Image (tube, rainbow, N blue to C red; front, top):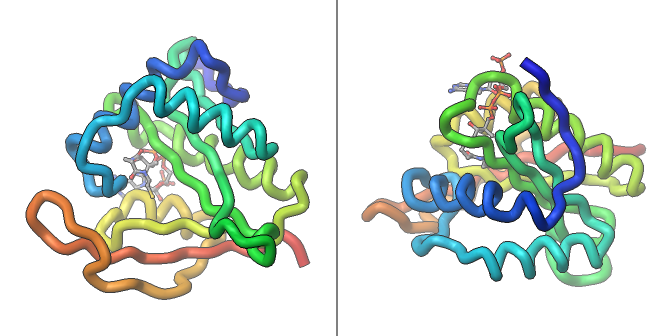
Length: 166
Ligand SMILES: CC(C)(COP(=O)(O)OP(=O)(O)OC[C@H]1O[C@@H](n2cnc3c(N)ncnc32)[C@H](O)[C@@H]1OP(=O)(O)O)[C@@H](O)C(=O)NCCC(=O)NCCS
C-alpha cells in the first residue's frame, strides 16, 4: 500500500466532491443538508489557494482517499494567526491512517505559514475525529450545546485547539 499527501489540483475536484457529499448525506461531521456541486468546490479551492491556504489530498495506491484544508477561523484581521481546518476521508478507507497523515501535513503547513493556533469544530459525538485530534495534542476549549440540527436532532459543537508556535 503506497500512501502520499500532496497539494490538490482541479483534477481532484470530482473525488473531493464525492467524499464530501457522502459525509453530507450520511454523517453529522458536516452540517450541510444539501449536496455540494462541483462549481462550489472549484470556487472554494480557488479561494483557499488565493489566500495562501492549503487544500491537500491523500492518495492511497494512486486513488484520492481523503482531503483536508484550513481557512480563516473568523474573517477579522485580529484572528489572522488562527486557522480552522477540516478533514474528510473516503468511507471505504477510514481507519487506515489517512486522517492521521492529512492532519500531520496540515499542521506542518500551518507551522511553516507562521500560524499560531489551529481550531477544530467537531460534532460532540464524533469519537473518531476527537480521538484523532487528541492524538496530536489538541485540547478541549469548550462545547456549544445544541447549535446545530441535522437528521431531526440537535447537535453540540465541541471546539478543540492546538497551539503551533510559542
Ligand atoms: C474522522 C476521520 C477524519 C478519521 O480519519 P481516519 O483515516 O479514519 O483515521 P486514522 O485511521 O488516521 O486514525 C487516526 C486516529 O483516529 C482515531 N480513530 C479513527 N477512527 C476511529 C474510530 N472509528 N473510533 C475511534 N477512534 C478512531 C484513533 O485515535 C486513531 O488512532 P489509532 O489508530 O492509533 O487508534 C474519518 O473517520 C472521517 O473522514 N470521518 C468522516 C468525516 C469526519 O468526521 N471528519 C472530521 C470532521 S471534524
